[in-house]
Amino acid sequence: MVVLFLGVSVLLSKTSLGHHIYAVGSNAEAARLSGVNVQGVKLFTYVLSGALAGVTGCVLMSRLVTGQPNEGVMYELDAIASSVIGGTSLIGGVGTISGTAIGAFVIGVLRNGLNMNGVSSFIQQIIIGVVILGTVWIDQLRNRRP
Image 1 (cartoon, rainbow, N blue to C red):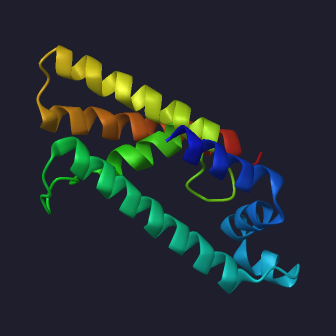
Image 2 (tube, rainbow, N blue to C red):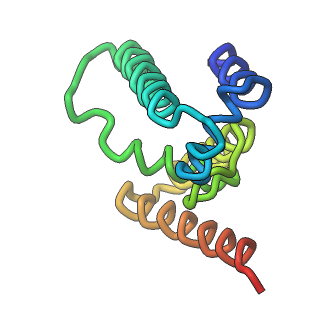
C-alpha cells in the first residue's frame, strides 16, 4: 500500500500526466484548449481507478478469506469521506494523495473510536455523513468568492 501511495503521489506531483489529470479535473474544456488530450487522460484515470479497485477487492478478499458480492457495501462513503476530509474539493482540481491518506487515517480513528464505544453501524454512517457535510461546508466557505 505504501508503494502504491508513493507511486501515485509521484505520478500526480512530478509528471506532466499528473498535471494534466489535475487540469482535466479542474476544467476539462480549458485543459482541452490548452492542448491536453482530455479523452486520453480520462481513459487513463478510469483504467487506473478500475485497476486499483481490483487490487482493493483482492486485498479485502484475502483479509476476509472469502468472496462476498456485498462485502464492500458503504466503503465508498469512507473513500469519499477520506478524500473530502483530506482536502479534496468536490468541485475538482484540488487535492493531494497525502491529504487523502490523512483523511483515511482520520476516518479510521473515528470508526475505531465509535466501534469501541459500541455505536451501531447505522449511527456511524450518520456521523460520517455529518463529518462529510461539515467538511464540504468548510470547503465552500473557503472557496467562496467575495
